[in-house]
Image (cartoon, rainbow, N blue to C red; front, side):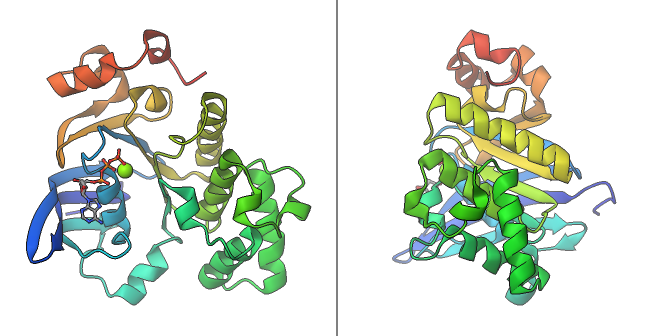
Length: 272
Ligand SMILES: Nc1ncnc2c1ncn2[C@@H]1O[C@H](COP(=O)(O)OP(=O)(O)OP(=O)(O)O)[C@@H](O)[C@H]1O
Ligand SMILES: [Mg+2]
């Protein structure tokens, strides 16, 4: 039973890939809830299943793979596993949006960034070409692209890594989703730009009233960003709780090891 205060309710979610007749399970029965407007973190080492979990919530298989999902993902009480793909397309991008781990692979190199955001807006909101263009320029401004009116016709390769990440975020929030999933949104960026992007996510979350699912391998990144955290290890959640409690009193040895990797100064508050 999903109660009305839950935006996303995940139960016993399992994900596996089949290759050459062999199946390997990479998400092993995880469960968690996200309330409307809540910020939740997923932390775990490389390969622990964070990105596959994120993709599972959007029912998006990685390019060229067959991803099988089982269990339950309820969005506002509606079961997403088994929902016809046409209906899933309305939810994807419109209700649940994602900033992918690798911005270059998720932006189309042969289309201007403006055309890509316009397309998203027109597809999901039925906006006219003119209205979509106006909103796209506004969105680029909102995420801190200077001179957005001129940059809107530039191609992804004409932007720096940090700006590309801003463009990805603009596209993800273009349809005002209820939930933004950000998968390692700052990993490829230098520390100053990292902090700017995290601040941007915080601000957008507040201004748009979105829930945020922030995925990272680094506890330093989620300090000051989220209210609750789930620690993932080998496809399972090994520890969950309010972020302050986990920082103060981690229960699982693996959580302690992840916390020990964070420089002490970063632990107290939000990133510099
Ligand atoms: N397309 C795929 N085909 C087969 N196996 C995959 C595929 N994508 C991921 N996996 C496997 O699923 C497991 C979880 O991968 P996932 O990408 O979710 O890890 P992650 O926690 O996001 O790691 P990272 O921090 O490096 O991004 C890994 O064992 C990985 O090898
Ligand atoms: Mg990943």
